Length: 77
Image 1 (cartoon, rainbow, N blue to C red):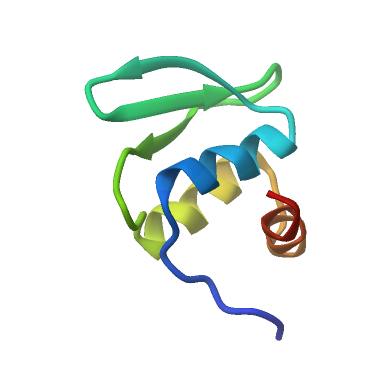
Image 2 (image 1 turned 90 degrees about the horizontal axis):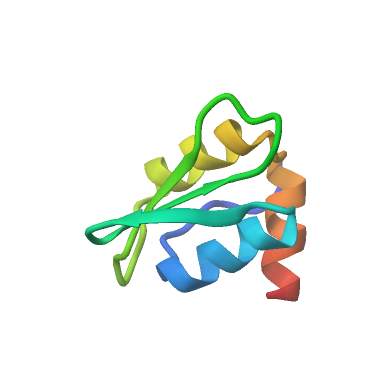
């Protein structure tokens, strides 16, 4: 099946999404909203030491990134 998801720091998660072309479009309190043209809804990342796995998986689905692409980007950031 491959690698397992695990909680990561929000700054690393932002870099993973930037690797695939998303940019921070705005911040609201301790939340970063990232998007790119063609997305239906923005990806929301809460500024936490360890972002929960559920938030990571929901955000990669919203961004249209596959599991394999996520782990590939994680190696490079």
